[in-house]
Amino acid sequence: MGKNKRDSNTLKIYTLGQFTVMRGGINLTKEYARSIRPWLLFQFLIAHSGRELPGEYIIENLWPETRVKDPQHSLRNLVYRLRRFLGDQNRKEHYIIYTQGNYSFNTKSDYWFDVNAMEELLDEAISLSDEDPEKVELLREAFKLYNGEFLPSRPYDEWTINIRNYCQRIFLKTVVELCHLLQQRRRWEEVVSVCERALEFEPFEENLHRDYVEALIMCEQKVKAKNHYHQTNSFFQEEVGAELSFDLEELIDNFHGNGQSSIPSSWNEFEVMLEEKAKGEGAFVCGGENFRMIYQLEERRAERNIRKSSLASIHLIPPKGKKISEEIERENTWNLQRVLKKNLRRGDVICPCSPGEFVLLLVDVKPEKVDEILDRIAEKFYEENPGSEFRVKIKQRPLVKGESIKK
Image (cartoon, rainbow, N blue to C red; front, side, top):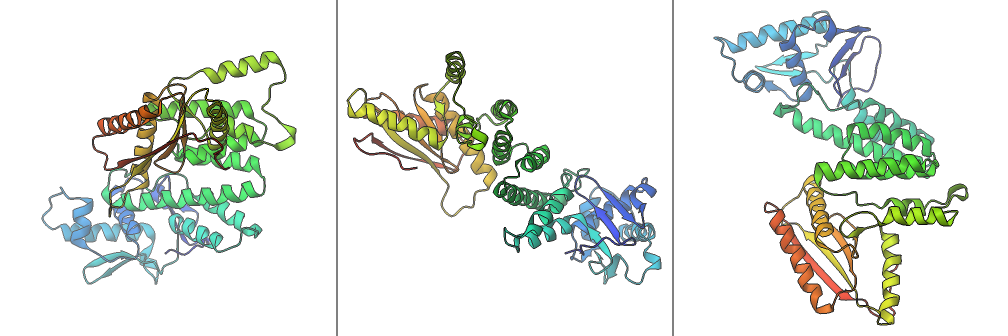
């Protein structure tokens, strides 16, 4: 891929969140701003770096509906104008190469490309150990290079889709690696800063929201953490019809820094806290630690025959031999959670596990009714998601005396 260097005369190409071409301190795209077609040709060649493209292929993809007498002649004129913008006529190594009817961008020329630079910085960082201080700096450099989607002015062009998705994956991988290192070093304020910027570009990445909320808690900004959690939860419900799968109170309960505690300091505070937690419709969704404690409480009641409860798991199984994208898996997981929350009772408990899997605690229900309840859940999922290729798999057992869930 491109050379990761930025000398004064190096051609600098910025495509993430913008399109700008610089050389020698001059903004070439601004200098020739009215020349749209030559720059579109340049974008196309950059997106296909390393490939020789026939003139017919370029014309079909960029101007499929344009009718001219001699399209090849028109293309040669555009290449001539583009070379003039780039200063190719005064260079030994041309940026635009023509070979036997094919055009390509010269990857051996003196240039810097933000997509390549971001990828190279990430690769170099991953090659280092977590203890190496340079690793954080390399990741931070890669993180700063991402300013938005690849060529945002061309959102519907098919030739931009693959590289746009690739850049998003590289960015998210960079964010994950950077947050992981900063968390290890307990640099929570920096985690907050990274997550805030990353969420501007990827608002649907739930793990980023979790890291952000956790970092705010660790920075003793619980009010901000709670506000963000509830606002995001509402946003997810409106946009995708599902709630966040992680539990805010569990994150707060797991916070051990500076002697902070989620235990209220007075009876009045305790009453307010209980009233807040009692709100909400449908079954109760929580994280693993809270689920374990609720389970153990129900198990104690079962030992004294106070009431019968059952433990169940519900799992989405993808079709055999077919690769399912993370986006489709996430969408089906959210849909299943919505069905569970809507169709189980308020006293039942839902704990999200791995993608597509939930553990359920069905409280005060006769054992012979459990299969009926779970079958109804599966039917509701199929009914509300007729296009889903996933199969619902269910397991259940009653609470058994002396049996508990391990941490």
